[in-house]
Amino acid sequence: MNKLIVSLIFIFSSNFFSHEFNPAHLLINEIEELEYEALWMTPIKNLGTSPELSFPKICEIEKELPFRQGKYLSEKILLKCGESLRGKAIQVSGLSILNDALVTINHFDGDRFEGLMNLKVPEIVIPKDKQIYPTGYFYLGVEHLLGGVDHVVFVLGLIFLISGFVPLLKTVTAFTLAHSITLAISVLGVFKLPSASTEALIALTIIYLAFELTKTESQIKRPWLMAFGFGLLHGFGFAGALSEIGIANDQLFLSLLFFNIGIEIGQLMIIPLVGLIIYILNFINLKNLFRALITYGIGGMGVFWFITRIWSIVN
Image (cartoon, rainbow, N blue to C red; front, side):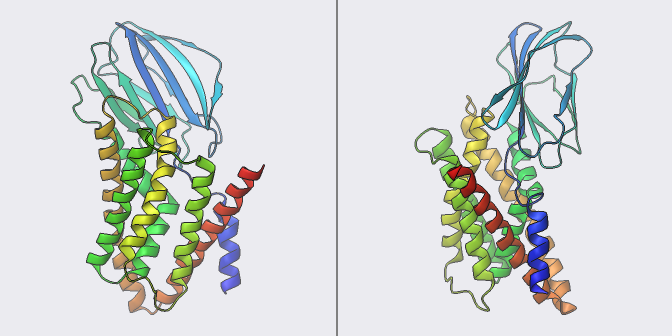
């Protein structure tokens, strides 16, 4: 039975567990009134066909040839519109289930708008009124947590590892607080770690969590401290993607704050649901089987990530 579980985990890990945080990004700057310069960045990894944008019919569109920019395929687009984009809709087709698209619009008068498109909501309407808070980063945080199988399984592992709601809440909050610190440090340019090395180390933290789950009784007396340490490392991983899509702006603090609040809310949404599932499984005597699936799932993900990322470093 165990061998079967391990085999299934490795078969599907390349499709699901290799999900990294690489959102697409549409950046639109109004360089003159009714004239816009757009940059459409789509992650090269995790994409089948390249997503296509649809702009309002009031705009004349000129596109340049796409070019590679780090982990992204970038395309410059010039828009000459008959009227303002405020109140108009932008649509995207062909987004992968593994990727969201952050939309940032800088208007000529200095106003800024940020929103989010994804497979479920492939359209965004640019508001006519000024946006005070960068709520797009909040939704990006929630979507990243709930849409990333790796993070969901990580939280599942913590739920099985820790007894009691309050200790669990402290642990996941410590994780969020820690990656908030290193995310800010990295994006601000105070200190950065090489992306490939960081991703390999993150894989080791996941393997360690799986190892703890194999024990009948974990030896970790302060799980929140372990989660805090893991979070410091994961924050550097988040920072690489956020830096590449251009998070550095005049609302940097609020953008980071809303992103991390989104991740925390996403975690808190998972806990009661999984708690109910565990209660039901325990009632029908399937809790141990489910724990085994989670343990091998986390371990399979960590091993797969570690091997592929070490391979990318040496080659």
